[in-house]
Length: 160
Image (tube, rainbow, N blue to C red):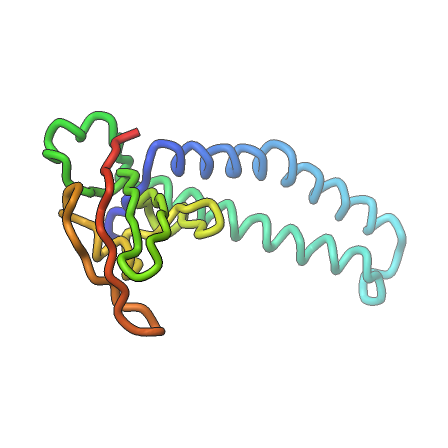
């Protein structure tokens, strides 16, 4: 498996989820299975089957998080800002203005697991991020969208 780029915040969020699954959720699942077993016949015990299914999901998520964290390439954008020379890079926050509508948008370029468009966190693999990477303030970029090409002017690039 190749390395997975991740910001410090993204890695910390995954670590917190992993810790919660291991210390809170896993013991709860074990307890729920034990309680369901006490109700007798396991073949027709919906409570038991639901608890086992949830335990299976929990264990799968734990393995997934452990794998992602073990292959994470954690990038601290504040430490690479001097090497970026004002260019948009992984982890940077970029403010753009649509040439067509004059609307302003601010995006932070993050890893796939951290992406959340509602919070302006865009995946490094998204068309928007690919159109921004390497560009500096005042540059123009064209982003290919399902509705056609959209032109943006980069207002500023920050490393926060």
